[in-house]
Image 1: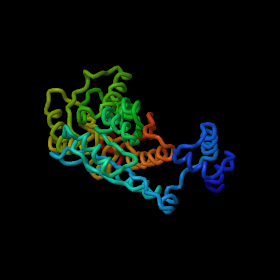
Image 2 (image 1 turned 120 degrees about the vertical axis):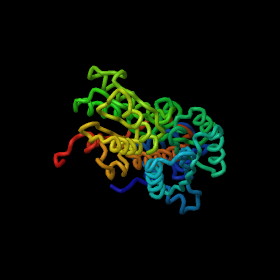
Image 3 (image 1 turned 90 degrees about the vertical axis):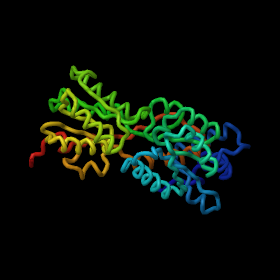
Length: 346
């Protein structure tokens, strides 16, 4: 079947083409009952606004800003930001959207003000926020007050009460890692967390503890340190855990960069992986496959998440929405590699 057109919507609703256009653009002078008929026809036909056709007709392209968070005093995550940007860029090109990116220092007390200033200066129609900005409820409310739609990538449970969030089920993903390690016989654990206030990463730890609880274990069986998602912090936290009195048989890291650092610390200590200690990461970034041994990790489809965020903002623009609270869950996958299970060829 061919893609439905605006004329198909007009025919289904029994109105003129110009009336459909006014409804789609949230313009006045349309009776409520007529507006509902048009929206019903749009839903029944699965009609989507052709943004590229709009642009060719001389309308300004939708502008979406992607806000990356970074601590300017430490090295950036090797892949997280670039994967999100690639996914958003590809979706923007497909939908005729202009994508603008900004990197904001998450440690700056005036970070939220800077984001709002950038959004207004760029005359943006929507914004994609990454953690920890994705969980800043005050910022989300201020954006809504400006009439700017927001989508939170990897936002937590509280964020979804204010704006749209797109991400995996971090709690379930953490549970899957815990269940995997418990099934291998591990009973003592180390855990390297991410930054304080990073809600999705904290959810991974909570899910991990839930898996331990189902096996009759608990937080008393876990010694943890807090990193900042960088290779260096993973190395340093792992050294502290490996040098402690408690000897963990498995070390869980909240992202792959920290897990790569933990691998180095374990190699320095002369430990065999996974025979002496299993190590797991999170995100399934390219680094997870090129380190030795390759990392068991959670595949988080970052490019798909960002693309879906752009799609949702386009949908909101077509519906005239400033905010659409709720959560869209994208599937994750446990990827088992040699860092937790001895390879048959080893």
